[in-house]
Length: 103
Image (cartoon, rainbow, N blue to C red; front, top):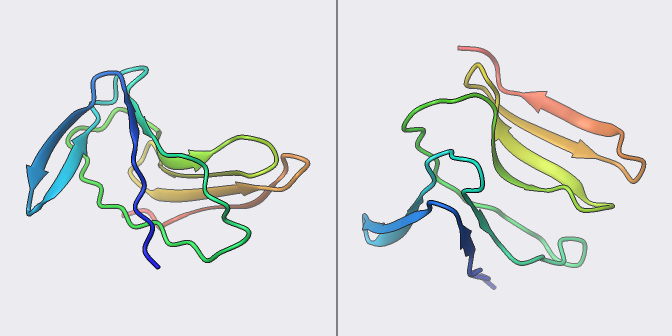
């Protein structure tokens, strides 16, 4: 089963068609983000597919995450351009915090 989520858009988000799909442009300004509803990730398999194109780079940028208790995770681009993942346990301790290799 494929579940398609609707997003709530905040700030200076722009939507436009590209390659037969609707894409979002988030300019990195404070308060600009897209929010998806909560998904019961512990009761089903979950795949997140995302295409990211950095237009300009302004430091650490979260791509997708959930910092609500107790499920804390995020995927982000580090200041040096590496793709990273960070996952925390119920005590907020990092259990996985890793990035791709430097270029």
